[in-house]
Amino acid sequence: MIQIIPSISVKENKITRLRKGDYKREKIYKESPLEVAKKFEGYGIKMIHLVDLEGARQGSPINYHALEIIAGHTNLEIDFAGGLYTDGDVDKAFEYGATSITAATIACLDKELFASWIVSHSRERIRLGADVFHRKIAIQGWQKGTQVSVFDHIAYFYNRSLKYVKTTDIEKYGSLEGPSFDLYKELLIRFPNLCIISSGGVRSLEDIQKLEEIGVYGVIFGEAYYEGVIQLKALEKFLA
Image: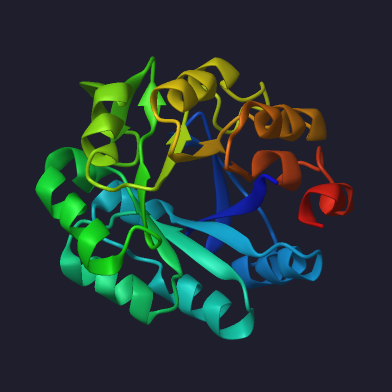
């Protein structure tokens, strides 16, 4: 059964969503990260994806406090992301309560370092963020494009024991236009033993059902919940 992973993106202690990854097109929500995390937990959700938007943009985590508060007041598993560039950043994330971390930019800038984390922290705790724009990797909080093929990028780590990869089609993020089904199908064909986590564009239960049918391991969504398009109660069939 597909893993349901709501996203909480934090900027200046507030839940903030970016349309198509654009920091100039942000929307701030009134509820606190902890309030929303508790609500997710209350509906039977086991894991959240916590994104430090400031950390992603600046290259160093800023919102460890949000991680610590949620970890201390819920039993949720927390996948933490945003600005993780060094051994110290990763160690600190785990110290503050992360169950796993997702790193993207450093995996592009220093492949050997990221690969070493898979060994030192285990493949269960280290997830690759491979976010794309027209099938090319984007880094630094999606503010910088590259000419690196998402397939070549993932293959490098797939051959080094990578188990989990989170892939966001940036054009879909925060758009409620539907996930990039074709992208995920191709990834599953190329990397059949990889746990693919979809992110971006989810607009309905039907989208989640289709992702499950094509073999996607997990789905991260945010906009659909925050805008009231998907109700948490409606997710019960995926949480049984």
